Length: 351
Image (cartoon, rainbow, N blue to C red; front, top):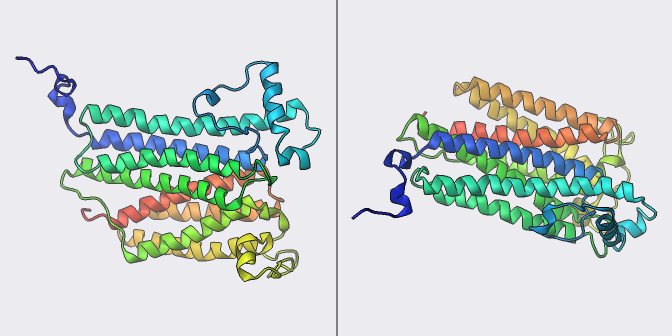
């Protein structure tokens, strides 16, 4: 009898694991994530994030197609506090502009999901996924779905009582995207190592690497809070903040914890000075990579760290120029990817 099952219909040569192909696929998805982070930055800086007041995963793919549909969407926007308290009197043309960025951000988020799920199903059907990697790839795909849910949870925080989204939820949304990016890079590098050496094992994380991740996490969290609180606007000078090392506008009246987590002056101050701690830790990683013989990774990490520091300073002194601020966020995402690649290089058991 002839075995007519779908798996048997796939030629045996096509059912061989293809780690190199999977690695190229994950690098492409990682690039898409960086693009989404860039559009997310534009969405935030143009105050576009609350322009779409509903979460429609399927029907929301299509934007309004005629003037009547645009009027309907605009009327929904007019019901939320942001319009009533900040944008009252906005024209329909201005609404269309902010709607575009939020719509594009959501569409690209869906594209990332499709870019992960569809090839994953294809590779699984072709039995091209190496042993042990299916759970990790499924987790990455699930993380994209979670990110979509977090995105709506973030937007919902600004629809009833606030004129913007919660900076805590915004930070969760951004950090989840960066965690996804790091996971894509790490898995791609594992698969590249496997393609070169079939006996290669996944890289591991040592104590020093975990410590560096903690330092970088704090900096990324502070950066997300700066964005969510518009804290970049509280000072436009560097290195002093409005002629003071410690800014004078910090509100301590509600306690140290409230100031630490909600005061824009203090969070801006912490973000600009903790960056030196993060940079030092990353430069130490670059030195370790150099000593390990990974000169390319070392120099790339140094270049990205210096670029990010310069862009941070320029963001401040230009009064948060939109395109410089967006580039600062994009280079921050690239820094996460480069750091993940560098830590992976140090964590490889088979070199």
